[in-house]
Image 1 (cartoon, rainbow, N blue to C red):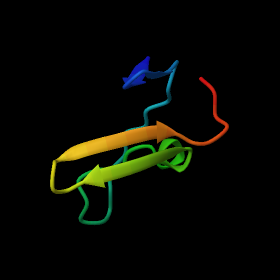
Image 2 (image 1 turned 90 degrees about the vertical axis):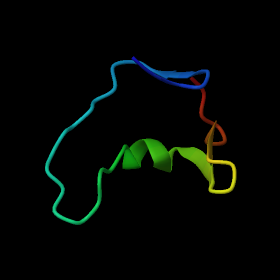
Image 3 (image 1 turned 135 degrees about the vertical axis):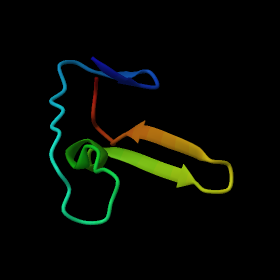
Image 4 (image 1 turned 135 degrees about the horizontal axis):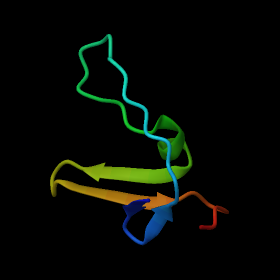
Length: 56
């Protein structure tokens, strides 16, 4: 189970693979596509909200 705040994802698929570009990692593009995410550089805070209409 993966939990972000109060939201839980049961049996998530986590794939580990080499990255060809100069990035450290890529996390859940499909998960981020289904959520609203705001990163505050000033406060070093990550805000996550489920997409409209999604229930879990």
